[in-house]
Amino acid sequence: MINPKISIITVVYNGAQYIEQTIKSVISQGYNNTEYIIIDGGSTDGTQEIIRKYQDHIAYWVSENDSGIYNAMNKGWRKATGDVIGILNADDYYLDNTFFKVSKVFEKPNVDVVYGNLIKSRDIAGKKYFREEFPKLDNMEKAMGVFHPSSFVLRKVYNELNGYNEKYKLSSDYDFVLKIYKKGYNFEYLNEALTVFRLGGASNINCSSYREGYQILLENNSEYAPLMKRAIYRCYFKRGYKELIHSLVTIFGLQKELNKRLEKKWR
Image (tube, rainbow, N blue to C red):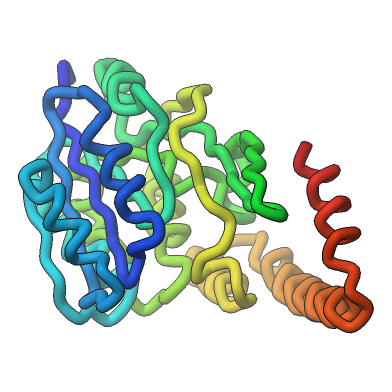
């Protein structure tokens, strides 16, 4: 497939803090065959005004209520007309030349999914820290083996699998990609960092994503479902430990010491 049309979907709700950088990272790629779609859930914080500022570069956008992140994503890809679909979170952004790199891989025959590396970003004491993470496709039946924001999927695959299962509120991307994997679609790895992902967000604040992951593996008759069940308990333990540390830091005024430890970890 030469010069495939790439459709990017961004779902947002009250994302004024970062949405402008997200939009700019799409429209400044320089790739001449793109389509940008934004699905806003009825933001009230100025997000819509930022979107309007760039609407000449946006193929379609709407602001209306939805029933969740994946309901909005389904709205987005069903509006798409591109050959390839990428999902970019409203607080993340693409690195330069991502679309050119991805399009070159799709020029190979029989490529259904292109997936790459992810840069995780974290703010510590007003400083930004970055760390590159690498996918592990072979782990797909144990946990999400690729990074959703750094993955690009043929629109025909979305059509054939009917997109995201909206009963999952936090892990439908895993359900979707696992189905692609188990049905034998062809994944091609691009050993390049494609997207910057800010730590935080809905899937990082509770352990519900692990519970959903367990249900997803059960539905797929995976032998690894018990591993995911144990991960649920580990998540609760880790969350409780972090809450305890946060309380101790607040009580004893140890924020600077904690920041030093985090900075050392992220250097």
